[in-house]
Image 1: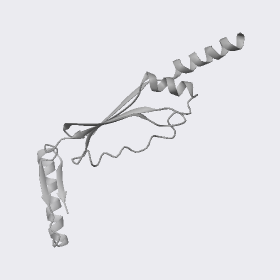
Image 2 (image 1 turned 45 degrees about the vertical axis):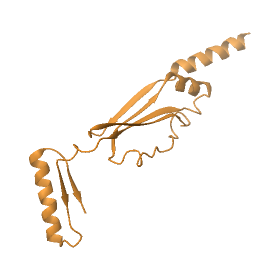
Image 3 (image 1 turned 45 degrees about the horizontal axis):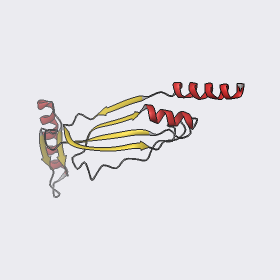
Image 4 (image 1 turned 90 degrees about the vertical axis):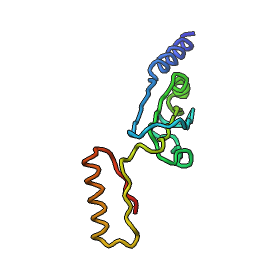
Length: 139
C-alpha cells in the first residue's frame, strides 16, 4: 500500500513539475491567412532531441511571418508519464503575406560588371537607409 502511495505521489509530482511553455518568433513580415500546424511533434529527452524540421516552403512561398511552439498540458502529461523520454510539442507557422515587406526591389543583371553590381548594391543600401524599410536585391 505504501509503495502504491509513493508511486502515485511520484507521478503527481512529475506531472506538476512538467512545465507548459509557449514561445513565439516574429520575423516582422506581414501575416497571411495561411497557417501550418503540426500538433504532437515528437521530441525526446525533455526536448534535447528536437522534433523534425517543419518544411513550409511549398505552403509559404513568400516566407514566414511567425513561428509558435508550445507544450500544452496534455503534452506535458505525456512527457511526465514517460518520465521525460517522449516530450511532444505543438508547432504553428504563420506564412508571410505577399507585398509590404520590402520597400523596393533592385535587380543586378547577369552581365553586370563588378562596378555595376556595386552601384546597384549601393543604391539599394541608400534606399533602405532613407526609407527605414528592407529592400530586395536580386542577382
